[in-house]
Image (cartoon, rainbow, N blue to C red; front, side, top):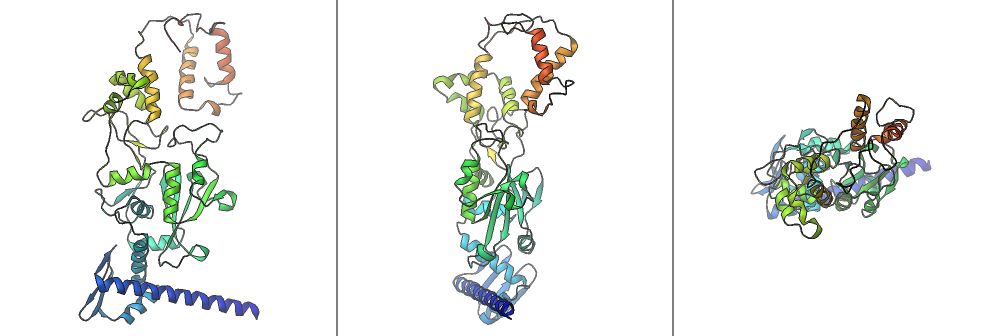
Length: 412
């Protein structure tokens, strides 16, 4: 009997909460419509001489009283309820034209306001998908949520309920985790709730090595932020990938300022003053080495100079790179110095297999695959024992390949 009583009490409490929420929603709608018409995401409401006129893409109704509108909003099977609560949530979010608002709408595939691009949005993993109308979004938000990928981040937007609910009709909550942890029970992950804690997750990679480039595809997995507000979500994302949301928004509005290689290099000073001497073809090699999807998740928008594009593909990431980063500039200094060295013809005695092995070694190191090669797999050129054998055979006690001394001409 007690269980039934508790169940009835809970049901009544939920009913009362829904009634209060719908009343608040109606009051907010009528108060706004009495001042000025509402037109938002396909929903229209305005006060007329014979009552209220409300319209969605599915239907239009006129001559409604405040009571009629209240009844429509109380019926959650009526699409007016979804359109109205969607308006109320974004009214609560506010910040029209801001970075934060645009990003939150992107997260749930809502049409972006004030964007110069079409409503076809990239998903962050090379696919594209059209922006969704309110009923489609609400169906997904109420079920498993809508997922977006931002670099190595998976962002899920869902309708708030239970403890997450703050009585704002249509309120959203946001879950953030590594893309490798999609579908993983949050109980199996290290959970966080303060955005600033995301900064600590970006310092080291899975092997404990320092990550100098925050947008490198080496973000650790095994963690989750759940039930974030919109503000907290944007803060957490920016702690993981600084400035990416802001630059994405500027690009969407058509005002991303891009500093190309040559102008960036020419303004360097001190020990980096030399980088503008890097030959044009070497800038191509540099971009291929550093500025591709396997090394950085930003999409390179800068070229050699205005009107002179690099042949290397800039990548497919959702957020743009507007100028060569400090890591690229630091590496370019070394390459600019190395490119001043004169070329020589060298003679080495190598077998065909040894030449192929050196090429395999370079490729394995460049692609970060050395640790993937098993010690017992001596058929692989970058195998540790096979490499040690080559060193014992071909490199002398002074570290010279085939005994050929090159120390006079190089600083390493």
